[in-house]
Length: 152
Image (cartoon, rainbow, N blue to C red; front, side, top):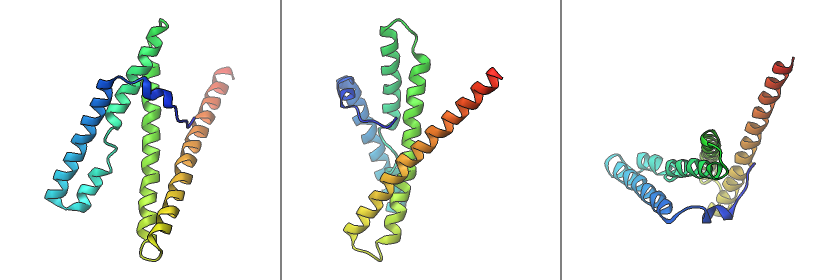
């Protein structure tokens, strides 16, 4: 399910925020060095890398394991599943972002820039949750087929 949980902000420790900040800064520095060497077009591709994703995914996994451990369970599988779900969301968000960029690229020569940004944002806001819903339905259908094979 797509959700925003502000309570998750308080679950992270200060060193975890520092880790995300440092990793994001290193990714941005790398993109700057690539841009300086190979030009802004190539550097921009590296800047589009979701800089804090790897640190965030590992933190999500450790948080889920910690929650399960608190109630006496292992939590390894749950942690991996939560990180995988976050990775899927990031990948689908990247598809939406690519379509956002493509929309801007197509419309900017023809329309006012503010209108282009609004239209490209709408593309992103429609495509990304739509892809998430398709993914959810695909996995539900696979789960139902798997259960019918077991019971049949």
